[in-house]
Image (cartoon, rainbow, N blue to C red; front, side):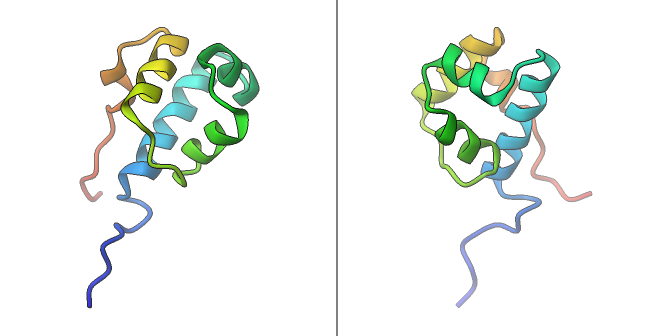
Length: 82
């Protein structure tokens, strides 16, 4: 039976987490600072950035507001190979 989990490099949870971390670092924020600004738990945010959490839409909006960007900016990643 084939696996239903995408390889890590193409897993949308991992790609989303990397995007959040990139935008967070570009704003000069620590995970703790972003967690405080977004109202999310730091441990939850860490799980999101590591691709271990399947984040809900409302939490995507909260992160976008804290990062001062549209939610669509968090979804600008590619699942294409290469």
